[in-house]
Length: 322
Image (cartoon, rainbow, N blue to C red; front, side, top):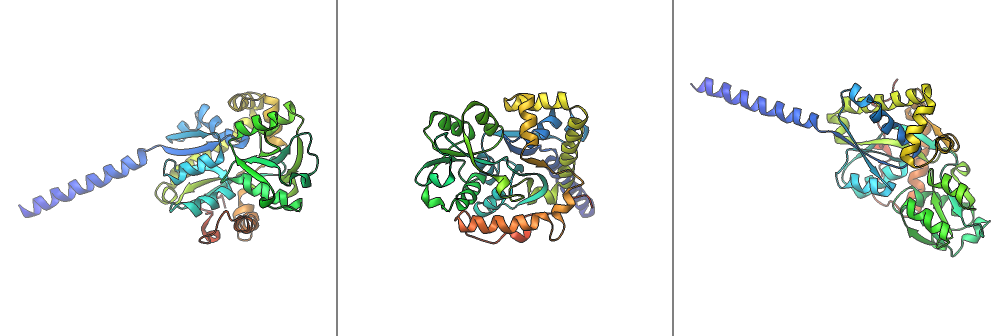
């Protein structure tokens, strides 16, 4: 009797454990994304059914600003996010959750810019001016690097935090003297407003990297799902390569710009990193290593991060094809 009861109890415990495991696996993978052309390939993957092909339940959650994506992660509302290395460091600073880079999406080589009104033609003239950007995000990094080029510091300007839509409106109306922005907003402003580019990431090549980052718990418990997510993303990239007109039309419509403007935003100032190119970033002393060192240095100098040093465990090469 005792043996039978023990066997039944063991069976029940095992069943409950399996149910718990299945429930965890059945939860959709929640991915936060802001408006940025290379991230559109995830939405293209969704529309073309590539996630379903991988038998992966994904919930893509759209945000208007990078800082909003970061806050959502810190609150435990998403499992992973398309973001910048700067935001990864800041998330590690402000949250007990451990965010790790699993793939490099692209690097900015002129796409992120400091745009000014037509009246301001020299970066040195920004002293005392009102500058808008997305606070607690990449914007402060780009601004700090730009001001340094002009012989200024963050203390020399008036900073206002806004989302990208509000920034565009404020610059158009002249209520801000300059803004830190990126495609598609920068593309629209350059076409619609006589704005000057005072500084861009072309002045700091390879420093600004966009990545897919996942919570460490997801990486450990659901590595297969992370691999499926990335496979679907690369399928979307291949689909766009083979069907550019259709793919660009789909992605441009979501961003509210024309297919030609989307193509311009995606190819001018942005370098997409292929699946084969990942190894160059993740290998010891690879491209990511130098970017991590510079990012940590600038964020500490500007007071954006002050705590624990996370340089050693900010990335994982677990999902990089060897």
